[in-house]
Length: 415
Image (cartoon, rainbow, N blue to C red):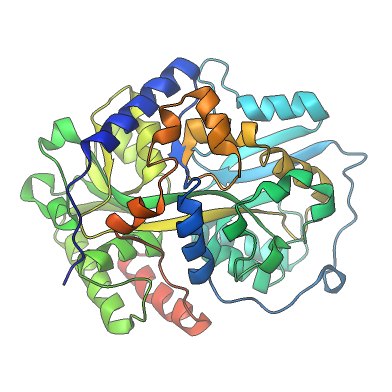
């Protein structure tokens, strides 16, 4: 039987609208944090459901390049689209500009990452060959961060140089893929669910099945991230994605997606670039990431864009900052990481990106920016919100499952 939950809470929708209105006034809003109580319950789930611990690999075992941070005041950062506070007028990132002014370190920020697999496959050969990829920090989702740590493709952090890193939520300090956070720090977290233009659709979309209406045929996009699109679909089929599901349950979900692609309901399976289909109007609905819909509202000035957790449940994920094994500017990268763990800075980013913030004290700082925004369940949801909406983390896969499931998914999306 599928888990049940109440229809979308009108208060939640009002809070979302307030968040977007605030962003326009202050040039601040976007993705969505997990927040205080949530990271008491949800982050415990994050820790419990993270990938298995990688083989031990200390700094002494890694062949690290000479660090030139003292003589080269630069840091090159690869991140996802719409994942840092941005000023439309100046075309700059306010918090990043403040960091540059404070430290003198020139940060090159690039929205290089469209999805985990695509970006990793692009840079992995160079990393394994010991070649500089032109980036000193990249951001990967937990399951890919696990692979990078396991394959020794990132450098260890130096926490003694990062006094603000202690502000990480208690439940995120000892994730199983990186105990003690030796190689990674959480950047943001968020939800996978349904997004749509309420005016163009003409009704509320409450379930995954609602996406397969005839009038939406060819106007739906879904994410290329397997754990979100397949995870949300499995939840719609009554599967506990945090439980011991097997190949049968997985195949049922990808067969459903394949069917909807073949029938023409799904226009495209894309990474972060799916936003372009929504902006252009070529697509009006899809399986999306929560904060992106806040971005879409702000950038298009269209309050009709809605994000909702399907009645059957949604996914929860986290992304992590890491230093590539070939970076010659590790200490500069660590300074950037540490800076974004200052609660006031984290709150400014959170108010703009509207994704889940892992930093203790950010909620209190958010109250200074906007008290109403600090109450939003999309920014600081509590454990009850996660439970009542059946928000789950896609369980850790074994290396064998990872290879098998990824191959099957690749055949569906045509990679």
